[in-house]
Length: 342
Image (cartoon, rainbow, N blue to C red; front, side):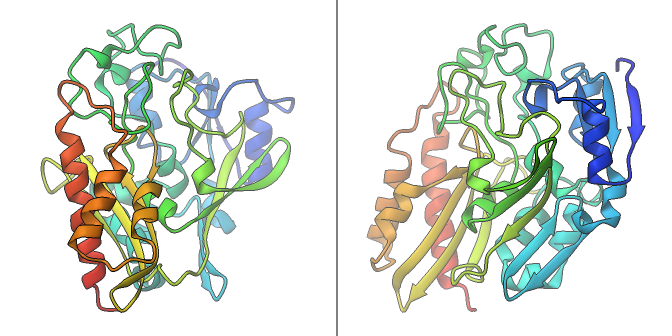
């Protein structure tokens, strides 16, 4: 790990001031900034030890737990999760488990108990890919780490990589679970930065790789997430998270599905679907939603929805199995959601 400056702050304003040095923010994305915020540290510190990330200054924002960023609030307006809330805290919260089960399940199935106790919700959605070519600096050709250098995974061992939302510049998969739950529930993100506070749909937070895979989110330099808000919705309680992985503990998804379903008898009134493990960013399965809306939820419509979702998949040599696995995961998740008693 390389030497760096360390600063500890007490509130959002002080955090932004420390990040910008009291002046203007540098003109780079958050993930590539020489200044980095530290919450749980379960991603940042790993990447610093691997020499993948080399911040000149690390800003400890853990004191923000004592502000609204550390609170969980549930009311008739929906759910608000502060960005400094720990994963375990949100997963175990009774209002989350009862009214937004997909969130609790996604968090419960992530990482280990120790990491869930440390990791913040804000940091979790910003975690970076587990692509081995990104995390191993002996590979010089990684466009996410060194823009313009190429992508070693294209012709390398790419079993864990994405088949949806990829480009010829990067096929790394997004590793998180919580993000899919937020996407399926039409969540919004509260952000603060040098230009003040703003709010965006969670769907607008992550960027597809395109020609700039090193730009992973729409956050500007020095901006930080302060909270997530989830509106009340008729599909929220009939929701679940299904995660398929090589082993049942402490493993990233090969394919996952967050499903939120509003049924009238056996007919789909509304459905929200987000996929993980198979995509370069948290992936909203809009094709599947369109196939299912207003139809009887039976084997034929479910199979058609799964097929439509992966119609544009771009598989490589070792991850071609993810197309069929992704379909089966979605089919299983929809059946399980339909069978829920609420």
